[in-house]
Length: 267
Length: 275
Image (cartoon, rainbow over all chains, first blue to last red):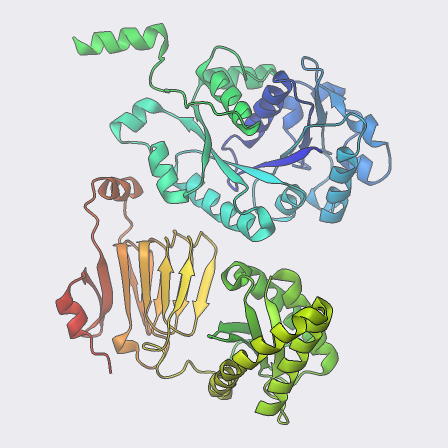
């Protein structure tokens, strides 16, 4: 039976959608059958990040309103044949779907003949209706945060709400956009600091990597490529499947110019 | 009194204080909110639920009880509407035994005897519970000995947006994160970092109320009617202090009409007068 994972954060702009896209793609690369559901009705982005925007004909809301069959709304990824996207409507808002309807859709997907291993929900920012729709059917949650006080505060609030909604001890933390050089200087929270405040198991740490911006604009998630962020995302996917993978040393690789700069600064 | 539903825990159950000018639909939604918020705190405890403030009919009590069991894991052993004049100690005891009997019935004959034995053991507790409830439901004020009465213990981290409200004193084994709030009739001891909001001593003994924390860095402390706000601090600096192990326990209390925060020492404890 498919495991339902919600990717959430509270705060907007910390990388929920990018994380969803990379984890979905990564799990598919590991041979799992995956469907990603965009629950950010009215402000959908997941299709763009995956480069599937032009293929959307039907969406989640059409399914709920009986305008199409579930299968018609599922879009097969252009690179990974194990990967599907169920987009949401851009012309509607969060009130277009209820928690009961969302549960029904998840139930239908679980019983789909494609036999998915993972159902990954991209949660909207905020703690309103959209948040509740996204978490209602989840078996576990990935809380995305950045090492900034505002994002940490919101993550804390979200963890409290997840606890209260039956996901206690089924939550993991992803710390996104770490800048190791700032951490070293003491200008940014370290993983230990984040752990200290939130006291939640950290399942992955992703460096701030400009390759992500490039990949997002191009519509091809970078998970699994040689970039540090790509490796970090693939490691998270492996940990989700239960594999034990050591954490990357984010300070190790700085590329040729980084090494050059370091060498020069020593003189 | 403001239009609201307030829940106050005590050692034997929970007191639900309903403002009389509230319509029933509002009571239902507020009750759901309150119990949802504290479901984790109550856990799976056996509890006596006392509705006070308004007189409810049987159907209403049924609806409210269902809400409580719906949103929390509380096992309601007995429901009382303390504004019902006819209620007596005997009636509660009877209701409680009956409930136990029913449970035994469901569990099967073999376990009935055991349930009876439990019932006998709980008898003393029930009497105490009723006495306590009468005391607190007659006046909605926090009881006079709120500072020294038995404290509640809360395990775990209070996160942003969560509120812990107790008429007694509270010991928190865990952190109170920024944005979380603790409201206690008595004192609060935080065996962890206090970074959120805290309000103590709403009872009459406010000059004795104190807040003690292993790391004292709250957003605001209110003791009685006095509110003290912290200088906005650099969270990174606070984390560095924690890393460097330079954090020491501190105590906040009232002194000459001001909120004082100082290092915890025997001297300070001795200065605070307890009865």
